[in-house]
Image (cartoon, rainbow, N blue to C red; front, side):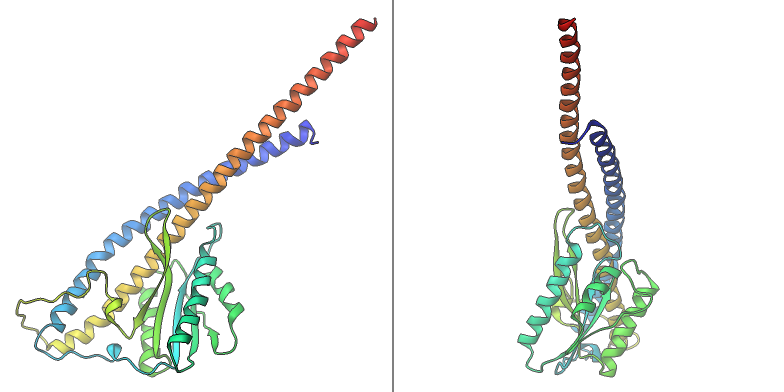
Length: 294
């Protein structure tokens, strides 16, 4: 049985842990709301780009781009998003499991026995995917790209992937990340980035327009300029959504840890009070016993 001093020490330690997890929960909650606001700010840009693409595709002009042309798939690139920091529960584990499932799914659906190149985003995910590197699977880390990358870093990353597709180093590029639904709901999601397909567009998608447009310069030139901007918008969305999902997972993990600390604290305090009362009772009995004997 633990002594009063040991219990007091444990109570102090658990109380400190409770304060730390509570503070981390508040910090993660603030970061999550910031990422949510960023997602809302990005939505109008992506919507407008998709609207322009819709107007171009439904016009009489012929629009084409190498980024739209499917080809026989021998080399697949998968960008898998994770976190750089820990204390976010099973967040990275769930994405890693989804990565393994995605690789097996593509192997089954493609008859070409493709080679896979994994581009991990986030330090934790990089460590995890290195374990599966081997036959037909290689891992390439991109310097300067992590889970907190924004702006120019995202654009450079998209340019790198686009260049590899156009040069033939990759025949297809997929994204695998945690889709943000709410604080308590994040779901692994896989989507094809290049070549661009209908599923790459948002839920509203590219809508047909019956209004006539005059394009200057020609429609195909505009289309080839707008499509890379669309890819950048998609990638920026994914980076931001991944950050929101990571912070949401951390909020839930810290909430669970905080609740467990409170329960343990209550149990320890109850045990401490019982032991203290028992000690007082024993002392009283010793005093009373001494008085009777005298």
